[in-house]
Image (tube, rainbow, N blue to C red; front, top):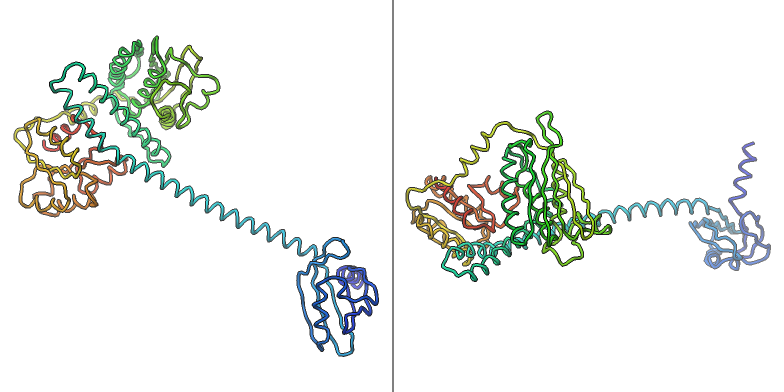
Length: 503
């Protein structure tokens, strides 16, 4: 039985050809190539011309693998060929048909190669995305850094000028400049927020705060802005919402502010209504329902599905933003566990609705303590303040602010290497240190101050920083910095922080 199988399968896959030293076929079987006795083997295929040069050798064996043979326009075969020469003018050529084997091997190899290539493509894509993300973050950081100093200077000098002896026309011009400063600052903050969102660095800070007070302050601000544009602003706050809740006060204010600003931008007449009501109250949690309804230009069906996408602006001349406000709103509401929806009709207006849950708090002690902590103390003597800053515009801005109070002696140095010699020769009560001075690290400079003497281990150091990420601020505070004032800042923020540091 075994002999039968061997004969069957072996015969179909092997062909034996006996040739003389000149390559003439003497004997052969025909399972693979249909050959004729008497023809020359080199006429079958160009490959066999090589064999004719080897035939005169004596008692040698030659092996050739993976030879492609196309014979008389038939299907191409992939074979192994063996040549065994002899002394009696009878040379044996053995052809083994391995077409299926090699084809399967090629498919396997191809599949493996494709897998390797896909893996390499994935690695390259990841490297590209990392490089792209690094470039974007560096660009945003540099972009922010380059703009913060001039915006700070413009904001401070505008604040100083508004209280000077100006006529009404000049004050109007200055108010336009102040408004432009706020807009530009908001654009920077929006871009930084989107960058934080994409990198996972935007973290909610939950604290107890006065919700009713927050809404009241927003009503005052936006009623004023609405009156300037001739738009009626109305806040309807249900009396049963809690006064104190626990959540991220800054981000809630940002959400409502972005939506109200958006409504103002796209409403030229009529009204904007803000409704806040209670959905439910249970297990020390309250879920609130917010609505912002405007009588503006509305949003068409084609655009409404993309308004929450980044850098998306409606095809209209209204609005001055860069298309980030609503994208940030949607993300923040989602992070707070809520959801937002919009209904709109062209030329009739829009209605934005969202729900957010907060923990409730029956105690206002934390809020009262926070208020007491933030009260600006009264200074009892004049203090020596050292400003380490190489920007002449920022130097002059801060000098004007501090000098206007009459409470400080101000010293300014613009080179980092002058810091330690100055501290050795002069008494300093507080240091204002820029994080962008020349090529020196602010942390290195602050550490040098702390190591100078026992006297300077507790001297307040306020960092004037162009880096506003929460992680950056934490890093600074862990390394010899008492407070961080992020640029751009205004006159009031600077004075409050300076006085609190000296209390």
